[in-house]
Every structure is written in structure tokens, then in C-alpha cells.
Length: 389
View (cartoon, rainbow, N blue to C red):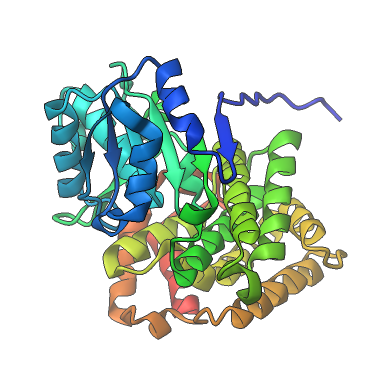
């Protein structure tokens, strides 16, 4: 067998965890020579959470933007970019979950580059391939104080939702990766139980999709298998609600999954989760949980090697593909039932007549390139949606 060719590049990241983690925030800003950082969060963060971050930043904070909105709609991102420029900010501190983190990254891009979000986003050419413009302007350092276990912490892509068209505008710039992440017990416990569960369902689904994707290597396999193992261990009702260590483990698993899927991509589950979540205001994790078993059945034998890795991570029996697939999907159904996750899209009020529109929007998502079974049309995505409905 010929030795495979691949590259696995791990971007630098400084992680600070524990009750004293925010004490390092000011030191990190000093290390980056930043004196005018702007905190980016939602209005819900005002109070003790924001005060804790302000105390950590000290006199290195120039202002606070509290206009983050779920799913990072374009208007709120543009407002954040304007505020970055008005304050002459030299760093962005994202406080919150995926929407805060994505808004901070995307606003940093819009503030630095000439052109609007659409002209700066990834597009699909006539050849069917995805093309990301080179965003060459220097970018502000990104520092993250998470409140939810989101894979967005370690990503370089920022998907902004345009309500006018229903499109997700993907802005990709490696210079917007987090320089530092601060995992504080009080802050990660501040998010509601349901939100922590939803975010971790996203980790669970993405880890499975990464392991089943067309690409990968021993290092991404290690990251994703452990991310899946840790998420499965701690994503249970008795610990996800109020146990700081369990929440921290879910945060770490999300980071591992985010790093692993940088090298593997994801697949149909992630793509449909994006489209359903943005169109129908449903958390991505819930949407992912509903469609994941149906996507695995759609992929079938195309994901044989990946299913074996998933089964190993979940300590399930492995034999022929059909038996392994059944064991994995049965385990997913069992776990999600324990968490009271709806089994069908109609259970979260996604109308059947809207499935074709979701499929049409999803077909342009770059994550499709990682799906083990090639997706040739929106019609195939609609078939998966019909099965999940």
C-alpha cells in the first residue's frame, strides 16, 4: 500500500482554564501590545459576566459592543465593524457562544477589508468548486471568553446570515483564528442547560461527520475520536446542567472537534443544520441531532471506514457495515432520547413545504465537499430532509 500524502498544520493557540484564567487576559493583551480592545457580546452578558471580562482587561479596553444577535445576521455584524473602526480598536474580545465569536471575527474582516460581505465571501464557480477570496489586510487579534461549548472557538471561517436573501455568507481568513481562549467556570456555567446541550450536540455530530469524511489523517482521527468520546461521556442530563467540570470537558471537546474538522471538513448534517437553523431559528445542534441518523443512512457504505472509527470511540460492536451503521444510529437515537431531543423536523415546526427551499440553500455550502458520498443535487438533500421530517 502506498504511503498517503497529507499535511497537518496546527495553528498556535494559548489556552487558559480555571478560576484564575481571566487574570491572564490583561497579560495576553500586553503580549499582543493591545491597548484598545473592544468586547463583543450580546445584551444578555451585561452584568457580572461582562464585569468579569472588563476587570480582566483592565485599562486596555476601549469599549463594549452588545449588539450580537443569534446566527450573526449581517446587519449586526456590520454595526460591530463600524464600532471597531469608531473606537480604533486594536483587538476583539468575544464574550459568549458561537454568535459572539463569529460576529467578532466577521466584523474584524469587514472593518479591515474594502468591499461588502458578499464580495468578500466564498463562492461556488461554474466548475462547481468553491473559491475563497484572499483577504490580505491585517486583522485584529481575536481573544475568546466562551460561555458555551462551541466549535467556533478555534475556527477561521465566519458564516454570516443575510436575512434579505436567506444566504449564509462564508468569510474565511486564517488571520482571524483565536490568539487565546479563556475558560472560566462561572462563565461557562452561565449559559442555560438547553444551550449547552445544543452546542454539544453540534460537537457530537461534527465529530462523527469529520470521522466519516473523505479526508483525514491520524492526527485528526485522534482529535475527533477523543472529542466524540468526551462529549458522549459528559453530554448527559445529570452533569451538563450545573457541573463546571463537565461543562469544561464539553468546551475542550468542542475545541478538539473544531481543530479536527479543520482538516477533514464535515458533511450533510452540518450543511443542513446551518440551513435549517438560519431559516427557522432553530439551534444548529438540535437540527443536527435530528438529521444525523438519516445522513448516516444516506451515506451508508461510503462511510464504512469512518463508521468503524465512530463505533470504536463510542465503544460499540463493529462487524460488517450494515451492523456497524445500525449500532451507531441506535446509540445516537438512545442518547438523544435521554436528552429529550426531538426525533423529527416537524417536531420543531419545520414545515414540509419548506424542505425544498432548505435543500436549495444548503447545496452551496462548502462543508458538502467533505461528505463521504458525493451530493450531486439539491434533490438528494431533500430526500434526507424528507426522511428526517
